[in-house]
Image (cartoon, rainbow, N blue to C red; front, side, top):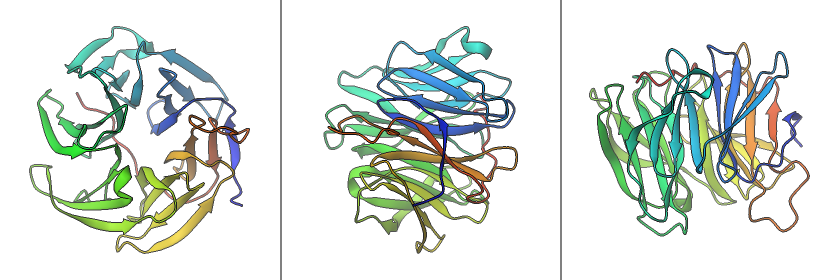
Length: 281
């Protein structure tokens, strides 16, 4: 078993989206079905919990403070301390919610959606640039999940979980992806959230797989971190030197969840992460 630690003991229904906030020195993560945004400062142990009022798929830091959140009805902005909420892009669709999201090297937000019933084609991946321009980049998605970029920004990685693939795209000068092809396929469990490390390797959480996989830029599986929980959902590097791998977990849908299902776990010294930019909008 991987030498993990318990960062935050919690009973989140669907913990997701860990993100290291460099400016604040804290980890941000969400409980999607609990409609909560959590923060955790590993240096002090301080935690905060903020209710969002509707299901929240992801929360990312904003330049200058505050959060951008991928909610059920669209993408919204909070000011510092959770104040002054406003919609950035509101597009409610019955039966659909926001899911995972990521910030690209240019500071744009890539926000995924999915239907609650996971109907094929019910989700999408949308790009929101810092000036507020909205563009649907991928449609015909089932469960939009992990999104990330190579260290040089020339490749984009993406997961639509039911495909059981991690896909890779070339990134054009306009920041848009092209030439989609599989990087790797998962046979045990379903690929969920991902992060990219300083070596360009892709770390993927396996829903119903009880593990984190690391794939090289050529798609070779070169490391497996086995965890006690059945449903790890996403991972991200954090800490002062970005060497600790934080893992969110879920208990939803499990008849007999492990006692740590829903908690935030951490694998100290797992690797070396990349600086994740804040949303520039």
